[in-house]
Image (cartoon, rainbow, N blue to C red; front, side):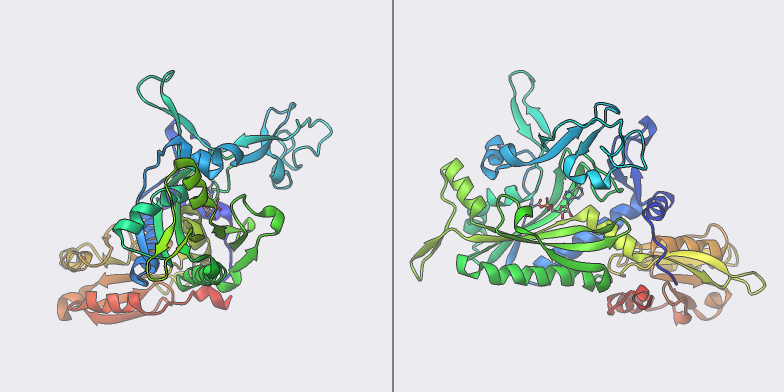
Length: 459
Ligand code: GAP
């Protein structure tokens, strides 16, 4: 077993197996936008479901929200995005390309890709200027007289502007959190590295409101909790690290931020940021809207603007990290003993994340096996994401399920017809055992819920 993963292999597997495709491909593609296919939808859906589960089922101090993507333009004035959500942009007069000035050492020159922009004698870079990353559009039927509105660049502001509603209707008091999952849009100057940095992406953000004196404690709490979420879902701890921001890196709203970084094939990169936003956002929205966003504690008579701890994750980036961490290649014995060993690619995804939990496969397409296998599949699919496949050799079907990351393959063979048992093949260990088809769903659910550790941890 080796850690053979590269970004090219992930992109190729995602396309080959229908996880993620370049968007608008029949029109030549549209820079850095991606479409999720069946298995991609299931996988990213499981990532988001696990995030919700960790906040809504495993604790009782967080509530959910789904705010609009289009918000009043003054939201972005108050949040500071209109004035300050910019990246430094440089143009090259020679090749006509645009680059992020603070990423030049990671980018390739437009003419000589082996060099960085500005390194070649022919490069002619302009001075850096601020480029606002928000996508603007017009609300109303007439472009000229309509109002300019923005596609939200983060889900967080939708939470702050609903603080009062939640306080009133969810009957919460600090410490409590409001969580939201949804699309955000940024006109990134240099998107890239597959779904790592795109212009349209999904965020999973939670704003946790606390008494000012408790902010530091909750900041530490959420760093620990969020790191644990990734390792509980199988990410190798030696591929994760927490990196506190230097003071000069901090966003305008933050007094402290730590990134959870993952060792992607492109190197250590941000997976999620945990920020101590202080009272910046609630104070700004109070100032701009005239609506008091504060908490009044009746028993103590104390009135204060809560401070906010924000764990902000990317659903696409987390999905990419889980794919990268799960990708494995190894040599396995061929299905028949007279054949040489075969190479297999396998996604060793945590069973909770695996898009398909079980595949039901008749060994041959005769002797009543397909009918029996279909009946077993029908019994399983109500409770588990299951798949039925009878096309191609059994070896090929196993390889296909390995590449999707299916934890269990149930094979129906001649013995099934005789005694009602099936073989259950384990994706990671490749062990096969016989089990009665009756009660199979309960047994599989028990196995899927059991603690799981990445077999790549021993590499
Ligand atoms: N509300 C705070 C905020 O938005 P951020 O660090 O800019 O913080 C949070 O974004 C997370 O959203 C990032 O850690 C990353 O996972 C994801 N993200 C941000 N920009 C992204 C992009 N262009 N493409 C994909 N994911 C992105």
